[in-house]
Image 1 (tube, rainbow, N blue to C red):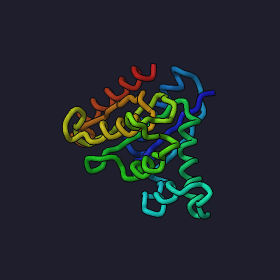
Image 2 (image 1 turned 90 degrees about the vertical axis):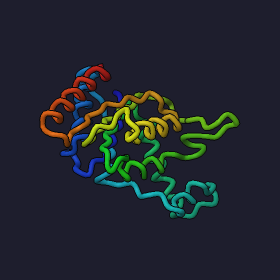
Image 3 (image 1 turned 180 degrees about the horizontal axis):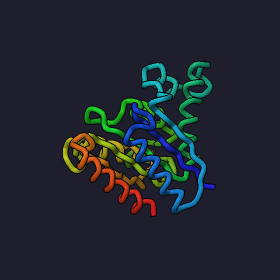
Image 4 (image 1 turned 60 degrees about the vertical axis):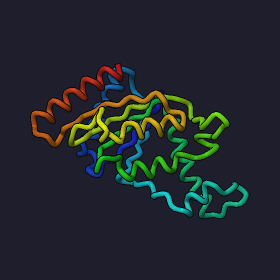
Length: 200
């Protein structure tokens, strides 16, 4: 049975538009690909600690030199990375807050970017060490940003995931959700169609 890692970050939980888009994607995947096991990482309900000097120091410390606190930090990071390794597909709900990704998602990224574990540097530049797999990014936004200079999310997420080896990334947008009921309905209908197309 396949495993799908579900990552959500909406401060509104299941009521958030990005979370609802995630649920539609999971439903569509079940219809087209059969049943699967899910691992759900809700970054709003259970936030990953923000990176600080002590946590970064734990990642840099060699195994034989780590103290107990450092080992617990590394074990936690390892558990997040193992969820990705176990997954055949990743479905990620990403609301836009103040032109960027949620800070909880940035903290998560900071804990899965580990030199020698998820990436390494070579004389030809960085190389991602995770095996590639499909990643569906459900981006919910109050305004319209895709394809404009104000869309900081798409290039950042694509660059970061590619940095650790995840290059098969598909974005599905629901934009203009705060621009009136008609625009919201059109945006969600288009997102539904894009979900059906990409997960077929």
